[in-house]
Length: 188
Image (cartoon, rainbow, N blue to C red; front, top):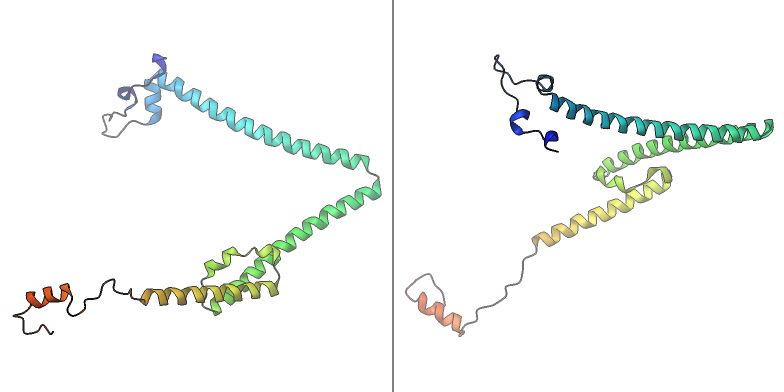
């Protein structure tokens, strides 16, 4: 266990004669123990990367194999129907994505015209909306946003009611009268 530890003295980069620090390669060449530790760490990371790639490849292969088996069991008509259905789904997904993009562009234009913060549109899922529902949602967001701003402004200018009020003849009043009796600007 003691051999696997790297002391700070060995791991520190010492300036070489040129005044620059030594590179990692130079340190590894000088210290074989560091080189072996570096190789172990590098091997572990390579093994992890290889195993991840292998599992992904095996999953893709299994999917392709099951697809091929499914197609092998089908006759020509069924194969054509299956391929047609697969292409139809891909087409619908592409159209949905295009529609969402176009709706988002339209929504951004509407929001800018209404001087609405465009970050508020992030709450809308454009893939599930239509032009009519987008307009209605923007109107709702605009109304809520303006009401919130108005409420914030009203609440910002409200003053709190004083907690205590000094009345004449009160003990506080007599205290003030005595304290400022010689002050000509103090009005009773």
